[in-house]
Length: 260
Length: 304
Image (cartoon, rainbow over all chains, first blue to last red; front, side, top):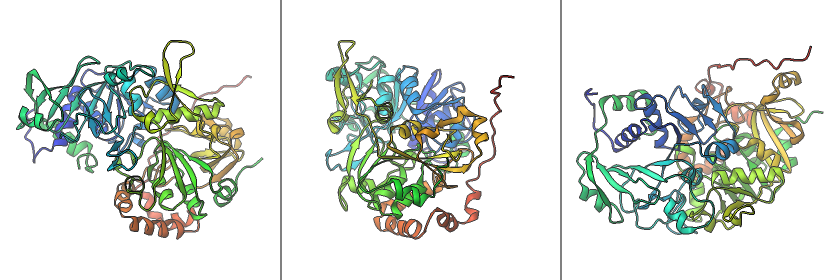
């Protein structure tokens, strides 16, 4: 697509467009709260019309007729292929190992892809009380792989040590050595305002695989709280196409709910 | 036997100070009308259990009804923060709020254990998470059939559960469609259950589609008829979520003065849900109206 673009492209638009492309070829995707909900909507209209959308509200095989302003919006129910109870959704669909990609947001991530969505600062009297676990604790170990969107790429969001670990990576789960070990690889892709990070095996470390236009590797290193690995074949992220921007702004998020 | 009572009567009879109260509904079917009546009747020291606290918890906490919150997600979905909760937790302003925290499936498992009379429920989560350290009620047990360990959560048996639904008959056979969340489990786990419905229908309507009855009457103590009682949340097929109000709430709850003024005007300032609806105005519902989208009938057949 080479349609002319109108207006400056925001970091959110880049994150969502790139994430939507990475959903190409993926089967059953569990979309979390926030930007993932927008990204799967875009993917269904572009890279992957056959993607099977699952929401933790119990909706399986959603075909939303309009943008969902949440994972339990009425528009994800109308026309859906199935709506199951939460015990079935978490117990059988997710815990049973039927989800290919879990798609989450987070406030903090560490080098192995453990996530914090709970607390910044002291546990007893936090600086910021974040939304908490929700289903993220369950999605992380039970989905085949995890995509993560991070609106901010800076040392506080990419710290050497998390303030709180809500959703542990397989590395952290193995180190703890208790409970049931994850069946999935954990985080495989992280989409930020600066670039894309990736990891392959369950015990691998994240590495930078692409930087967005105008961003240097040094910029990303300076904003990461650990010594960041960089892929040998690092690329510059292909920017959103005119079509992607048009869909996001004029067709999907007309009320600027996610694109605020 | 009819179990139909007024909202005021249901809350007066079944919700006492100091009780553990579950008010479930996952974005869909949240009984704001029941919560507002709890606020009007000035219940105190409640332990409020909800997977997703939502605006309704911000309101109940701000109104001084709640001393402890048991939950698994502390925001208003994608719409943003619940600032009364954040003030209480981050700054202890005006007083701290005791919180007992689980993941979503942890809460689901608690309701399942509670409903089934089990001492605990195992789940595949929590290995390596800080949640069990934050909440010591999440515990580790030996797998009696294997060599490993498994995290478990305790049963949740509230004194009373309140849920909202599309319709019921007067006996309390409750039909729900769309997102059904943990309504069934939360009702069965409870000592007493109040179900608030959009409408009461004839027995024959319920019996024409028994698979849609997610909560049988034997689990229900009181049925309250309260049309539009889930506003600003939604009821599939009846009215849509008031997304504009959800977006507005962030600004209201950010300022405790504004929040208290809102409670005074919209809850204390209305005698019941009918007055709340009158205050919103008849035109208000035009934007929240939904177009019909009927399911195809199913044939249950019958022996000739």
